[in-house]
Image (tube, rainbow, N blue to C red; front, side, top):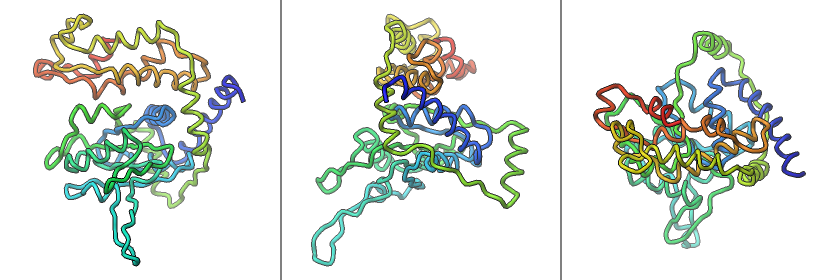
Length: 317
């Protein structure tokens, strides 16, 4: 199959995936779109939203439709790195053997990642970056494909360990999961209180996901789209030559080069999922908010004047 045929086939698979996920998850279209873009781009996601918005169910459903192994790790203040990576034990022959932890799966749901101490967060983030873990001096490769979808509760901040900016930067997307609309909530209540449960079917295999990730990287992109993405990111950096007046006034920190890379990879994936063979500026704009949201830091003046991160990003675009 050549790349043009692969793009056509992917658009069909994407529609089938959305249809299967829609059997269980009502609404949340934008969240599902961005999660799938992140997976097909080989990135990781941070889902931020109040409790009870089906974040865990959504991740579990997506892993089923993709035919991937799935593990959920509940992050708590007493969780140690060995609890997620695994540890060495003595077997019956008095030899050390490595027992793999829950991190050894294709899709990891890191539930409430901000509830665990920095030491354990760092172990997870190393695995995200390297796609491998080190235990007792040995390196163990994680299964491919490998994605971390972490959730964070924005309202309970007592007893939490907020992720530092350098660690947030490892996540491709920071997705805000909002309340459902009135009609969607009515449908959610009807479907979840009726005693019937929907079964979702596998649509894509692990091998196909790896092929899609390769396909995304091969998508051609014109220079003007790359330059636009880099200009948008450069605008977020205060006290630099490209900074806008708003940036200098309201931001204390801007996005790094990883944001530019993710904007282009995300735009490529957004384009081919919608049947296009090359991304344009509209594709960059479609993914920009969730890619830049956690990479720019507002100062006190911005907070005092009620300037939102999303409002600032729209002005940069």
